[in-house]
Amino acid sequence: MAGTQTTSSRRWWPWIVGIGCGALACVMLVLLGVLAVGGGLAFLGLREWAQNQNWEQADEPWTEVAIPMPDDWGQVVFLRQSAHPVMAEYNRKLRLELTGQPSQVVEMPMNVGGRTFINVYWVAEGIDGHATLQLIDHWGMYVVDLEAPPTTALWVTHFDGEWRLNGAAEETPALLEAVADHEYLGCLDGKEWPLRFVPASEAPEAEIDLVGD
Image (cartoon, rainbow, N blue to C red; front, top):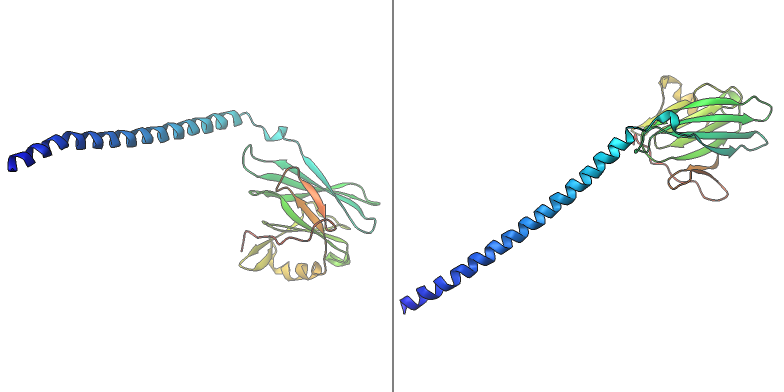
């Protein structure tokens, strides 16, 4: 009886080994397939990177979007230029085309990451009692005195719930008070192509998630 049991076990042993080897072979094939796909994607990524080495920022066009100002003040044109071949990084500036004033360009800080979405506000009596333009995106606030335009918009960043005027923190409270009574005009929406200005009459004001919070 004992001899019969031993012989039966020996008969099953090759089958067990064969099944185990087959399972191992299947696992290896799956791993090789994953590695092959990963390698292919890596190759495509390297090829795209190599192609992008021919990218020249100077060749990138400026996209222009007009923002109508109230009370016959004319318009402000927002300009955006890609600053990276792949990433959502942009150079930005404003061109003031105001009634009775020569056209003037006001520089803005670069958007170093993230799709364009900017809330636009009008302040009838803002800085020094002047008409003032206020813009807010996820990188901060930008303020332009339209009656005495600066060469670069005032940039106010936001950290831990507090606004701080870039380079002149002690002047922040006065600036915030000057733009407190603002009117929402609309937004510059670049989350989906194409970039466009959406007036307040078409969509309500959206909350901005600030990077510094």
